[in-house]
Image (cartoon, rainbow, N blue to C red; front, side, top):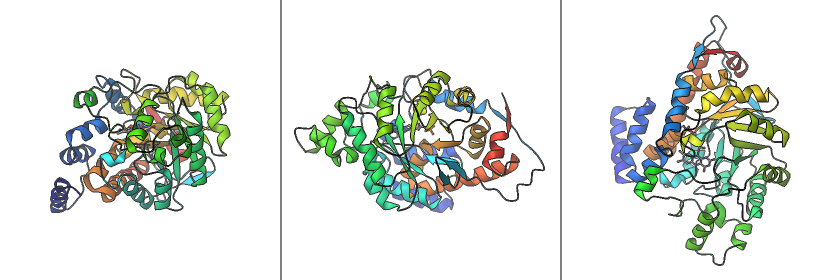
Length: 378
Ligand SMILES: Cc1cc2nc3c(=O)[nH]c(=O)nc-3n(C[C@H](O)[C@H](O)[C@H](O)COP(=O)(O)O)c2cc1C
């Protein structure tokens, strides 16, 4: 723990509670993190219109609650791809978590396990997918793939490794064919990828290493950076990933209903409506605005998950009322990790899930089915 973090925790202890308000969690994270790390986590691409559209599109949704529904026994468990999860909340894939805390994904996943929240592990994680799985035996994990265009065998091998390590599903992120124009990172001249925060899955990958002409970290980082963009990614590649394992394949980053239909036609098992937390194309539609059109197109044939701007229990209620089967949460848990490692993530989840419980009850929805049946207005 850094001196700054140590002092901050004493401060929090003095206050006797971890901040309840998301805005204060974010503020504390800003206090403990170096500027470039905080900017990397918080910022969006360009003018950050998309980042703000995510919140605005959620704020425009108004819940129409039901009364006298008997919410004495609230059970928000959800069945997805044959597995039952305790509640419809997942940790979004976030790479390079060492940015926030030295224990990175290991701290995050221990907190996730404590609350029964499945974690989606990024290709660019600081610890390898196997190390993370070993930290929490029997806890549900999904693995997120960034397609390696020049060497598809690397992505295929990573999917196979995830299956062998006991992961439940593969998520393929499709909105990163090029890396977004992130002005704050450019101003700070900061790239955690180049700093070597995300090389564990590559370093431990035989297929990846076989394409390099050296084994030192500099060579590995160069190999990652040079292969990060994947502008030719297409539906045939998704089919290749699908064939590589017996795991369900979920495509992350869909915003247009026509793409959702293509996903169905190519045998994809699930969709995540997402704009990458506003970090890719700026000016893009807010996730919550895109969600209903995709839910309509998919019409219950496969699960539709959602992320972008989820900060409180009522946000989860809104996403489910708009038709999502589950949501992913990104930045909030990274701020918790920055503030106090495992304990910080645990506090963030504790507050979010308690808030969700209360919000579902007040909406008259004791379960996911009734949450999804809620009406909304603009
Ligand atoms: C610092 C940071 C790193 C991220 N890294 C990844 C990643 O490695 N893979 C991925 O698919 N999405 C990544 N994302 C996007 C998240 O998975 C998710 O879509 C987004 O954060 C959700 O929005 P929210 O932060 O408003 O909850 C990242 C987001 C942030 C903030």
